Length: 314
Length: 314
Image (tube, rainbow over the protein chains, first blue to last red):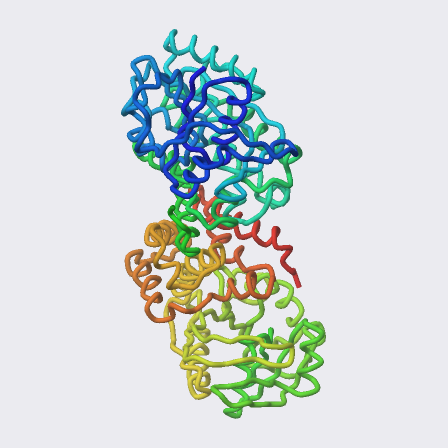
């Protein structure tokens, strides 16, 4: 399969590496100049399950993607706030039969893609893999994971393509699963991020520490309720109890984990993806006439914390 | 005037010192053993407007107050969570005509006093003075301030006594003002604490830094709304716009100030008085059937931060 990975931070590197290793035709695109010069010079470099690996692939500035490559899939793995610009920039790489696939954290990305790409050619999903950029030229890839994807609007051709992608990704070791209803899955993952990412960032703690706070359960329940109310307005009917259980199950599995938002803001002093998590629920709740006070306040608090810490926007 | 100061941290020391300096008959009571032995040995010691001062006054363990002293006023200036026990402990020092006066931060303290003391003998108010314990034997007293008090239930004898206290306190340099409706004033001050104390503690910032965050105004408005809604159920009808303006006016006056709750939790790693600020609105909102999501979440978040930091309860 011919794949352009748009956004080659930690996660983009994982997917590009795995796909290239198993014989797929992979190229990468990014907007970060430092990163790009290393990619052009040395290719993808990572510590992958304990071993240093290096794979050379074509690397393009996102504003200078090739127009003659007939990619089967453009896989988006940039930061949420970069997605709109990224889609516009890499659009010249699309043929009529190229699919856009988004596996990024955050709710509502299929709407951003559909602004520029035929919704029948949009695939959507989640990844539970981890990845960490250690330097502009190096990525750390440990832990086990999986990913899942499908067609958000149920188009039969897109569903067929999603199944092919699942097969190719699984052959590449990415443990992919097919989803009939990827938007359900995205909202469900959004609940994990909108609770644990957000709260662990505000409180500067890991999952176990959060789980031991006296109001931990109540906060999770209230936040999941707001995600579910907004989801219902968008045709996604979350099983609230199952989602709360799912969020809380992670305490035992990855209790010592500091979520990615914590790493962005507390460790690396970068702005967060809050607008695509609780912020999505807040703005869309208002649009639908729903009260979403927990997500409103949490969004304001995370932005306030970014402001107080003078977090980097780049 | 014969006054027992119950709780001799920073603020209690300020009031005891000023009253003793101007010839009042002052004694102090506290439950902190370390503090008490210094008080017994050296008296009250403070850096007071740039000068080191020292005044000897009778100092008692709060469980061993004298029963034969005929105090005119017992002035409560302990931490909110210590008040209930403190009232019970110093009750033997009360005569039939002793008044209880509470100038502590927090909403609802008059209810705690009225559990043990005739409500007609309860006085209530606020202090805008600052005070800081530097060591168990020493207090730093700078800045200008004022205080205000009255009878929460409008009893004429209590109002008369409140006016006498105002005069004595003002002679002592404490810039006291008489209040017809001290509960209004307590709720209004509660709004300052429930916004700026709470938010600056969660965000670990001073007032100016908070004021520059993008959601600063919205958060203040929402929190004041919840205080006002609960106040209305208790016969206190806040002027919401005036209160919001009052909160925001402090950005320019004491912008570099880190509120007392910040000092408690972030600087001294002690548990906070959140249950007597947003927590009061949260628990009483539920009691009155009001939605108070901002105060609910903020109370949970501050308790969570106490938990994550293993804040000291003593």
